[in-house]
Structure formats: structure tokens, C-alpha cells
Length: 402
Image 1 (spheres, rainbow, N blue to C red):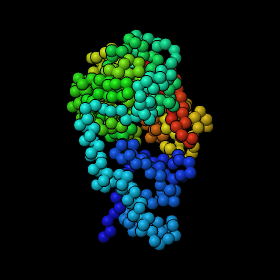
Image 2: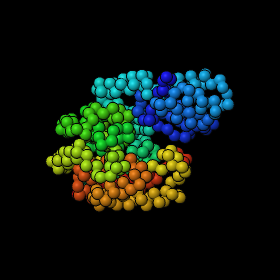
Image 3: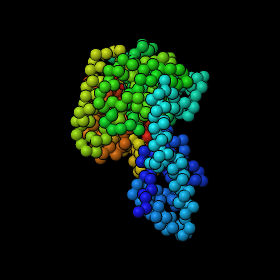
Image 4: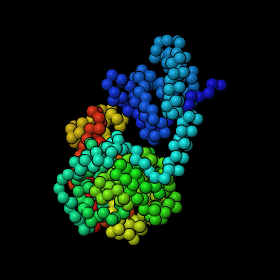
């Protein structure tokens, strides 16, 4: 009996090719297990369906003969299978060995090295200082004595710098010695889980310190994944660390928490805390918030809606135009519920249509609302940005006070 072809990994990024003159489907590994990027020509895209763990080389051959009109497709089959396999894009030994190796490397590393320096922001300290000074050049800090926290984007700083500035301008010098509890979106983690690490975060500015006592206190919770590999590649916390270091110096103290999606609640109903492990974690983090009080300042690294072809919609999206005007209204309705500290009403809006807005900040926001109940929010800036010509991300700057 013919052996099935290996399954194509479903934890890859798939998007229309942005490369002029090279149409097709772009595939890349955002988990960092592989450094390869492939562009599958349009004619061959449907052949990827054969890599489902059930279909065989015979099925792939039949598909290619139909597409090409040529009976001699064996070299093409070998090339396609080898290319996907060598890239680490198939669920086979090559992928599993790379995955295990990268996760061992992160677990054994002394620190969490920057994964986006030199790409999303400058890799040299002097250049970084100049660029971020430009981003944050604006009105003086508000200086709220009752400030509990802020929400800032995690979109590329070059695209969302004005909203980053609106959020971070609330942090004056008086906050320098706080422990910043950073609730970041876990784009790659398991649902209903929270990723922690004991590692300090290294950026071109230097080494930010992780609050090991607070990490140790939370580490035993069943919902926690310790030394979560997702920290190695995640930008939602890294970007916040860089902004904090720019304001307060390299040795800022942080508690980095990656919040996995509450997908079960979104798709099956009920509240996130109906999961006992989630309920326990939220309760424990809330106890820490009440006990530590003003020693902590909360920082949410979140984006909002993701609309357009990159995200699976059958239409192109333009910021502040057409359908995105309706999206803005729905975004603001959710923000109003957040600002009113109404966690249940906010979550009911997220659950509508299984979160068709694709808010990748929904879990950190809900985590904060349940952990610091009664925090009153204020919208300081709302923005939409074309991440490519056909896709839009929205994001906002919020402040939270007692």
C-alpha cells in the first residue's frame, strides 16, 4: 500500500506573494525552526492539498498530470517534495529534529536574545537611539499619580510610531523603578495558556531584568508554560522592552507574560475562566496585582483588527476607507467596553461572529480586565495602517487609571 505524503505544517505563514514578478503563495516559518521562504507558483498551489497526511504520491502525480498536461512529472514531484522537506515545511524527521533543536537552544540560553533587531528596528545602539527619539518626540508626559498601565501596539514601530508615542508619553520619570508587567499577545502559543521565561531580555540597548520572584510565584500554575519557546520569536513583548529601555535605561525590570488565545471561548462559548486552569492563573495574577499595588505598572502589547487578503478575506482593504470605516466603529465599541472596565460586555463583543475582526490583543486585554478590575481606560489614539497594499491592521493607545 502506498505511503501517505508527509503533512504540510499548519503552523506556517501563508500569504499572497508580495514579490513583483513572482506571483504565487509565499510560505515562511514564523516559528524560526527554518530560515527558508518559498514562493509556490500559482499553478502548483492546489498541489499542496495533497500534503495532508492521507493522500499519496499517486494523488500528487494525478494532480500534476492534470495541471501540466504532461505524463512525465516524476522530476517535478521529486523537486516539490524535496523543496518542501528541505525547507522544514513538512511534518517529517527533518522538521521535528529542527524543532527540538531550536527549543533546546532557547531553554539552555542564558538570556533571551533580540529576534527583531536590525529588521523591525535598528540593530546599533546609536541608530536605535536616534530613531526612537524621533518616534517619541512629542508632548510631555501626563504624570498621572493614579496611572495603572498603558496599552500600546505591537505592530512594526515604523508603521505605528504615532500610536506608540501616544501610549508611552504617559510614562514620566517617576515610573522608572516600577516592575513592568508586560502582557503580550502570544501569536504562536497554545490556547488557554500563558508563557513565562526566567531569561533577561537583551536588545541593542542592553539587558532588561526579568523579575524572577514573580516568575517563580506563577511558574507552578497549570496554565503556565515555563521557558516557553514562543518568547524566542515573539515581538509583542520585545518591542515594549525596547521602548521602555529607551525611556528608562537598559536595566528596566519586567515580568513578561505571553497570553495565548482564548479560542475555546471564542468558538465554543462560555467565558475564558470556565477553563479551571485559566481561572486559577487569573486569580493568582490578580492576587499579585492587589498585593504589589503601585510597585507594578501594567503594559499591554496589543494590536486590534486584521482585515484583508493577507488574513484570508476575499477582498482588498484600505485604511480608513470602505469596509474599514465599519471596522473602526466596531473597534471603538469594544474599546468603549474596555475603558468602562466591563470585561463581560467586552468579551461578548469579541465572541460575535467568532471574532471576525481577528483582534490579536483580545486575550491580553481580557487578562488585564480580570486581573485589575475597575481600571478605567482612556483612548489616546486609534489608527489603521496598511501592512501591505491589500491588508490593514488597526491598533490603539490606551491609558488605565484607578
